Length: 170
Image (cartoon, rainbow, N blue to C red):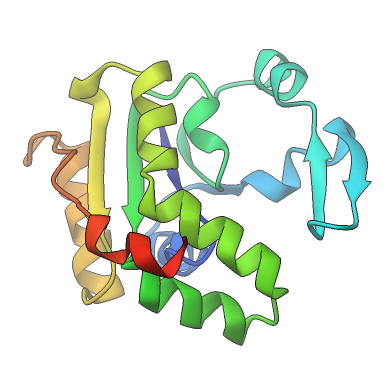
């Protein structure tokens, strides 16, 4: 079974993957799989442009968990979308040293549910679990993901509503 952990940068994917690795799960990082599919550098947005279609079509599924902000595009058995309240996400991304433009691009994507909407375009709703990481410990979230993988908790999504934060992105 291949599980994808996705979400906007800053929602906790890498931190969570580190915890899941400590618990014995096989973890693959998206960034380790996309190097051959980088087509350009977008210096203005401070990001690399990936040929997503080629990456997805050549990706070899495996047993374990892959984490990264594009992994919901892959043919996963289960998808976990991590969410974070936009004001907290903004602080996290600023702390990373992202440019103001890059911070706001990601905060906007989070407020508008971009990762979840894309996941729903690629996967059946019964395969998706959305988790708000804003005020939850890594330990609790890792346990929740393990329970989801074992069928102990049902899929759930569409309950996160950041509409009250739209003012910070307009």
